[in-house]
Length: 381
Ligand SMILES: [Zn+2]
Figure (spheres, rainbow, N blue to C red):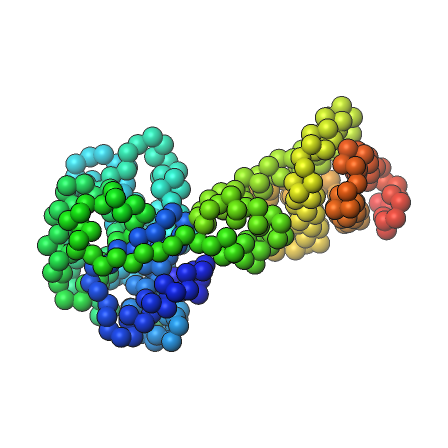
């Protein structure tokens, strides 16, 4: 994890980098911040920076042997501990390590809900048990293999109950060149004995603007949608990602069924759809149309033989591949054209009911007949 991959939190990044250059790396630190603030990502970037053999002034180099291993989370001196859901007394976190690495690499802003669903743990209680505490102590007793430091990142020490007291001696006087980074969300749920032995690094929630910038720059959202999601997310990036996923899955559901019913010319279904779509509200209607443009453009990639450039998730990918079989380039372009026109008119306060009905009828025409829809360059096949 590089510092520059982390959203916002500029002051904290500077403070962490400075502490390394000034040789003030405290051996036990608590990265305390609300969910979705990036406290885990910051701890990981900090550990990578300390281990990097070609540190730059504002970040790790990203390419030295240490950084390359950090990128895959397989550096032999980087250890993790995290709550897990297997209940046996002798169980520790090691069997979940592969899943853990996958999760952290795919989304360093993950929360307990995501970890739970990744392990398919449903209603089970997460815990860090005695065996895991012994496992932590054992791994910290190993000699560093490649780095100057060996680092243990403990996610959610809130789950360390009294058995956590086994770690106190190590937190107080760790072996030479040992770094223990605890990443927590709730200070009041951490054992006082642990709190008093760590240096506190308080990480604020992300600002609205941080989340807006991220959604606009990385996820290509228009400002209105990015602002709305940011406002609802209250500085939690994971929440923002969840909202985005929900909106996209609603759009997918709406748009794919719209395409199917117009392709099959199902009059009654179309009337119901038009009725529902007209009640979505203007912003959602625009999002739906924009989403449709994006999806049909992916169909155009498939139809142009550039399937390898299509990056979609399972259900969307299935739809695009399937639907492309019933279309040709001219039809796909005609549909995109209709969607763009509709977007233009919705922005200018067109009556949504009339508009969605009109667009639906155009789709029926485009998809059903091999004739030339008005204003498009449709080639008979
Ligand atoms: Zn490096």
